[in-house]
Length: 110
Image (cartoon, rainbow, N blue to C red; front, side, top):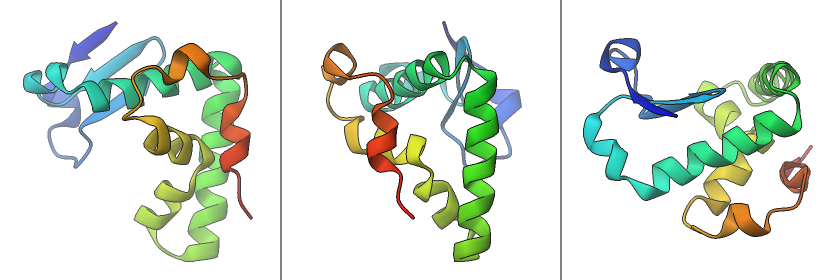
């Protein structure tokens, strides 16, 4: 389900966030942004693969690993394997149809 919740993301730079089973968008016009929606749908699939809770635990641990290694919040976020997969494949509308399970592992880098 896709929701627009301007209050939740109002004071952030976040355009969209996936909190299973919801995709939450900051702006109503982003409902037409196919790249953003596909990016968030990739996160939905990742969350399902890891039974949701393990996705969030892994996401946070990986974020802090990269943050302490790189010393930069934005670079840490962009280095998370889940984000790397989603950004790499967000412009491919057919990606989820052919995506293999645990594909985010290809984007893990140390």
